Figure (cartoon, rainbow, N blue to C red):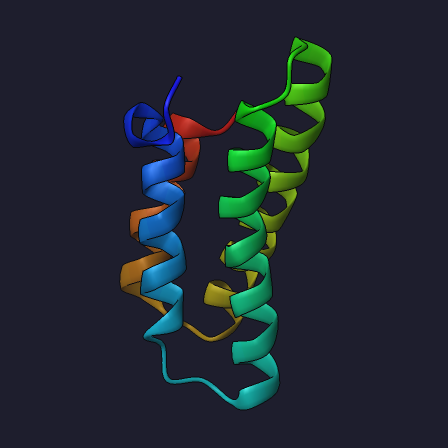
Length: 94
């Protein structure tokens, strides 16, 4: 499957770009940037793995990074993004 057709990957990119726009303190912004980038990169890497087991490993890492990003959104009280990504996370991540 190409990344262009991988819906969860496309949503992860949106998550990354939304997070990049946030006005939060530098240490939080750095952590959020790394977490949201990890979501995108691990989905991409996992999609290229030959076995389901290898794919699941990278998808699990991606989910962990996504949850980390959600926690940061919660701690910084970004209600609009919390709601958006709670909904997307429930629909696109196990």
